[in-house]
Image 1: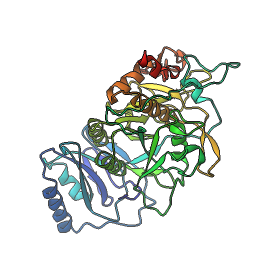
Image 2: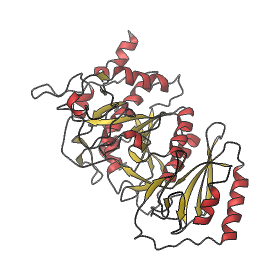
Image 3: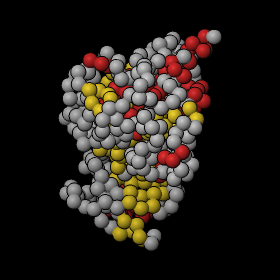
Image 4: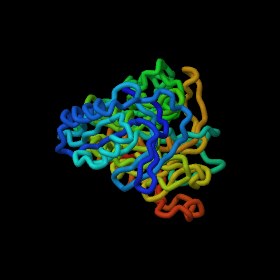
Length: 427
């Protein structure tokens, strides 16, 4: 179920709360909290306070503040559907969260509820793409140096055995949380499968285009890093490329409950959110590899989620002709590796044969996710595939001039060992 786009409704000033309207809040509950009892309690609270949800708040200004490390607030539009809904994640169901539509008075009460571990207003999540012109991302991925003016433009890639012993299906699956995918595009070669549409806005396929472009870099026949991978379409962003944190958590819960282990690709960012990061920990512990875009704000990636999560491989962008970090790419110690994110040729959602050109860390993250999927197909476990990706990354290749003002930034570029990892394993 999808909640409505958010609108700012609360402002925290000097530890006092100024009331504007009811809003949707995410509660992460203590592990021992009984979720049904919690739900019943807050349903009674809401009924007693006769909470009213205004329907016409589209013109309210946006505000975003934090009151402490664990309980942070960002503005959000209220749900017009359920007032409270809850879910549990993880093998032992120790991640528990509820989305509740609350008045300001009830929100103040919730801050003193010892059954609640963390509080976050349901904040916006933003896709990571800016449109530009065409580069050769696959060429850079399979060589140790930047792209030269007169070099041979070749991409060497694995076409190795599929992992059966480690529990990964044939082929390995990449679960893409995005705006949908144009499944009918001929270059996908019928390797895109429907996961779940959590938007339910009347659109089908990919009305935005971002998801098709990212999926094209993951696994299309011409532009894909892994040309045998299966891409599973989880649509969580609407026509305008908008969603909220609870929509992402819903998708993650569906994946670990109903899907086989594989790679979860998250080409989006929101402000650093400990509840989302906690949910990601459960997904990782369930046997999935997690890959995220660093973000396109030219800031420290640790300020954003899922990029800040320690359970995620975060990928930033470089220009493959200069090996410099472009001004739009986020950076810092939370970025694990960089890959081509400038002028990336990929598939378009406009037609079943069209291509397009895009830039952004989403395209770089797509390469990281596909490379991990490739290693999983070569009998690596998730941890082994992630470590292999880190070990093979080319160190010292990024121009120092482009990261000297970006403290903590790793100097590593994604590399597929010229498509010879499988051959090396056989030797």
